[in-house]
Image (cartoon, rainbow, N blue to C red; front, side, top):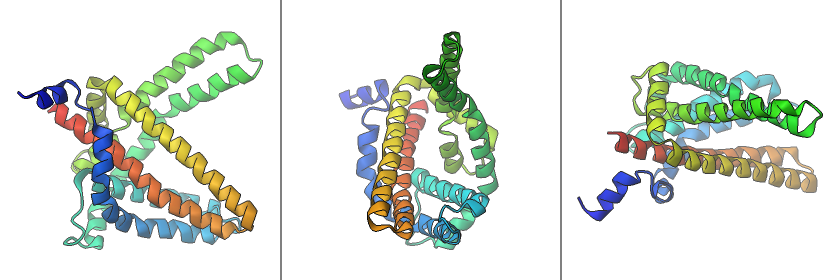
Length: 251
């Protein structure tokens, strides 16, 4: 075994983020093509409301967003020969497991409840006059929530990688992969989460600045949609790259 191979066995996730940055340009166009129609539909639904938030069509927007995320994840994990496979044929393949993707998203939301509860309870203890004795239980809840969230974070990628899996099987695969490489994956997952947070703050700030300067809510809507269309698939692809490295190391 040469030195590079030995290093990759010892540190299977080493260089995975940099490799994702170099590989993403090849999948940029297919992902943009596949997610354009869902993003456009969300934009139309938001445009139909008075304040452009889309509150009246929230359920439809959520369902479309799940489809868009699942389609982008499928391309990030398995690719899409968009020159030879028509878009509608690709959509049909994604729709075959769309209900499973919805069920998985609902399951992940439930599994993320301890993390959300831990964040809220910890914040409440810190900023209010609630008994400081609650800080330990809140931190324990937060820690448990972080572990559960990380352990289940690759389930969508497992489902997109093998469309024959059930929701439970996808969660089990995610748990097995992250259990073996928990800490190397955890800090990378946290880094991506930080990028998501910073990107969201940046988009909101830019959108608010333009809106206050030009007084155009329509323009802010366009910026929100364009930002999500460009940024979200990239973040999904980074995690997909980590998933591929972990599967390779596990095998």
